[in-house]
Image (cartoon, rainbow, N blue to C red; front, top):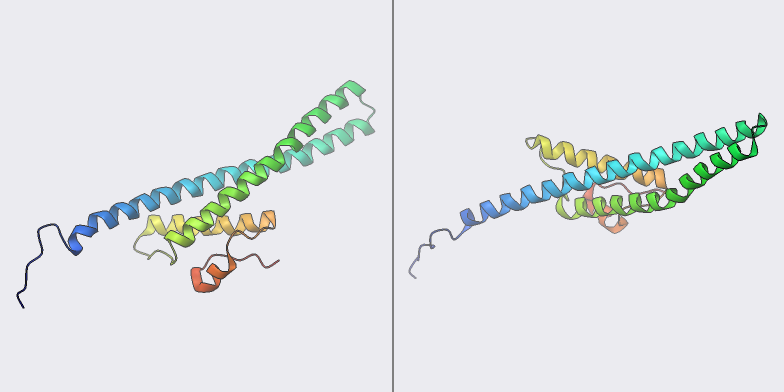
Length: 157
């Protein structure tokens, strides 16, 4: 047998820039998905808080005998909040599931400690998935995937 040297740019070294570019792209996508879930979670929490505040305000106005027109206006504000809550919840659920799926697919193992930025982003994403799952009382991961050791949380309900 004759050994033929590989052509320049062929072999393991040729894949390193591609792997590195894919890794950078995955990290960028992870950052976008984490940011989207974080922002939507904050929005959802703000609407929940506004719901409680508006209900209390309407109740207080009724107890104090406020004018019917003022009460009606506050009820409109409350109804606006109640209208956007389901949509915001659905978006949060969708984005959190997409984040969980992306992390399971692209990061089946926790990134090594020497990749501090990626590791911090991964841990933040994992915590967001867990917190969102608990907040919405919804499982965001496929239990068969988590049983395989992905480290992603499973809703115990």
